[in-house]
Length: 472
Image (tube, rainbow, N blue to C red):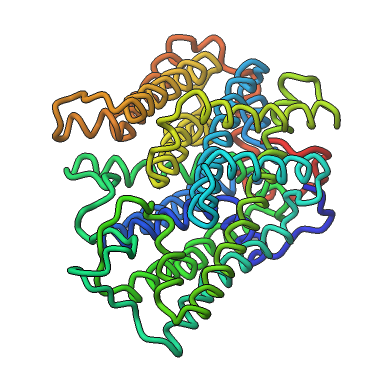
């Protein structure tokens, strides 16, 4: 962050939406609505609940601590450099999975628009985004992120508004027209759980995932005080509701669907834009939407690369501009290697990949942050043990989904294996607390002073000095 004046609550709230609700998440949600129906709308409610939880439990104490990242918070709260590295490791992996989902979307967009292989889209996005990240041309400034939010909203809403205003809704005959690649509603994407246990696990992942997103601490550090930080976060759910109206608009445009496995659900907005209007207008609408999505992909990947590069530079490479550039390059290589080594990753649904980002954040960073703010007996060993349990459980769950290994015999238990947050999060909290009680002698000596700073009003009245590097 390189701003010298604290932004207003609305601008900061728009920036938070742009950073945490990527174009991949929005298109994945749109595809789920089109295929699964209104039941998918509850996912947005769960994310909104996450922001309410964030405003209630986290944002004000985090602002009073005057840290610039979750890694800074872990080191400041627990007085442990190696726990800082573990938190940075988890935060970087959250960022890498976010970048991976954006790469997958870029590959599918390229294949649909130009008929090229997916890897062309991956490499094209990498070649464009990396130089921008290294140059800092699209940094994480609040003003730019807020502008990105409104740009994404306008881009995605334009086809909906134009079609709803002057053109008839899409009505595709289910018996004929098999050349129109839209799935049948009710066939499902396989993302929404079939049991109540799996559904609650998914909702918990979305809510706690928002709490643990690494970008939040950086954004809160630019706000003037704790009261303004809380007010800013409470503005996010209404802005999120405004953004979510666009996917519902696409759903309203389509009355019937035909099944074609050749198109992923997240591409349905482009398909509908093409077929909802006469040939020329439909092509223009699809081109506008495709261009807007491409710009959002570049901006999202470049911003994440710079943030992850800063984290890697600070914790591994000793800091500095050169180290930041090396870290950003490494952060780009990891998702590309994952796509190359594990072809199954690129075949997963975009909603599944986005869900894993929320899951990892929910079972690692969120428990550390909440317990660090509200529990005075937390120790570095306890946090490290909980982070290890949460990270390993997420990796195992993702591996089972990539390899399509049948486990658990279906039903509630089988869904908990592939949607493990409802099971893993309490386990992580229990591990952190039990191990902390066993290692009580390792409690940091300044714990009560730090808790007092976070929870006493007026502790954030010291003038704010912007950070000199982008860190997670």
